[in-house]
Length: 224
Ligand SMILES: NC(=O)c1ccc[n+]([C@@H]2O[C@H](COP(=O)([O-])OP(=O)(O)OC[C@H]3O[C@@H](n4cnc5c(N)ncnc54)[C@H](OP(=O)(O)O)[C@@H]3O)[C@@H](O)[C@H]2O)c1
Image (cartoon, rainbow, N blue to C red; front, side):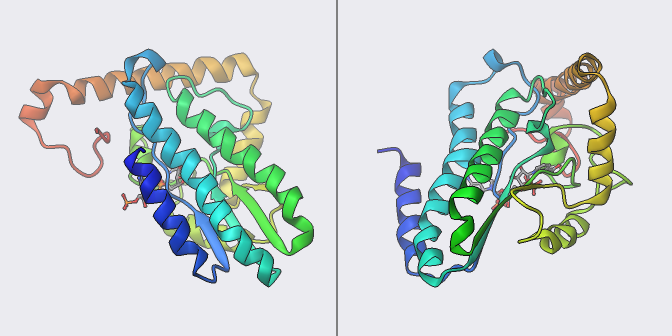
């Protein structure tokens, strides 16, 4: 048995004994960052699937019986705008795992709606966290990149109100509407160009020469 399976089994057993009112499936990873699919070890993809997709599934399944018994509860799954209608070349696996989270949430929302349990997937654009540094150099807070605190405040306000798929941050919603007006081919070109640039940056940072010269710290591309 994979060590992770054992950890999830123990988590599931522990959760069964708790009265979980609200579950936020927030954990997620984007490593190895901007790479072509064939460039990363298969283990990196398995790890991503386990955290982004399998853990969400297991933990959700674990809390549902208790919520059903009590006839209420809320489950918030962290998806990503990267899975909604745009391509995300060089982050293909990340956006694909987030697509799973969105579809998982949409269907469960319908499945459990009449039982008093609200299931929601939030699909933000960039939020200024460590993860965002794995996507772009421009991860610092700005008009379109809220801090984690700002995002969390908006996110909490949408629990139970936003439907199965929502974008709590107003500026993210505006960004989504803007993106929807850009032709698909232009979006593809732009995302590929940006992510190729970021891949180049990551490769430079990963080179033995770069790591000998400077330690990787806050604000640097995240490297595993
Ligand atoms: N930041 C963005 O721009 C953005 C945009 C869209 C969606 N999201 C989604 O938002 C969620 C939160 O991301 P973030 O931006 O806050 O990223 P982050 O700063 O990298 O934090 C990731 C979180 O996931 C946890 N985690 C990672 N691997 C784990 C594991 N194996 N077991 C348990 N916990 C683990 C981390 O716990 P530790 O701190 O203990 O390592 C941390 O709390 C993710 O699902 C992400 O995909 C983020």
